[in-house]
Length: 165
Image (cartoon, rainbow, N blue to C red):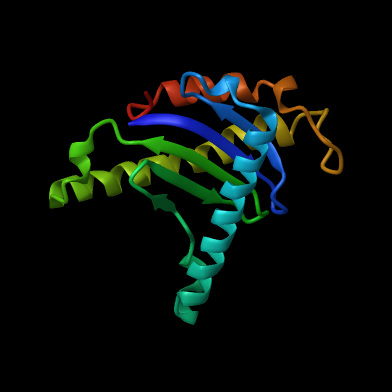
C-alpha cells in the first residue's frame, strides 16, 4: 500500500496540517491544493452526515465514517470528539486486492483497522503531545505546526509501520 498524503482539518474545515508522501506532490499549485483540500473535507463532512442519518438511533454513537474506497485509492478517516479530522489517502500496492476474494476482503479490513488505530495514535500521542501541549500553541490563531516536533515524529512513526511505503 502506498501512502500519498495525510491531512488534518479542524471542525470548520480549515486545514491545520498537510503532508504529501507521494513523489512529485510538492510541485502542485497552492490554489489547486487548497481547492482539493476543501473538496476532501466537504466529502468527508457530507458522507459523515449521511452515515449518521442512515444509522439506527440506538447505534448513532458508532455511526462513523471510517474509510471511503474508490478505484483510485482509499481515504481513511478518523474524527475526534473535538471535531478534528485526520484523513490518510492511500492506494493499494497491487490491483489483485480488488479481485473480490474473501481473503483479500479480510486483509483489507484488517489493514483498514490498523490504519484507523494508527490515526488514533497520531492524534492521541503525537498531535496532543507535540502540538496541543506546545507552549506556542494558541487555539484562536493560526499556528505553524512545522515549528513543533510533530512532523518529525509523524514521519518516524509512519515509516515504522509495515503498511507504509
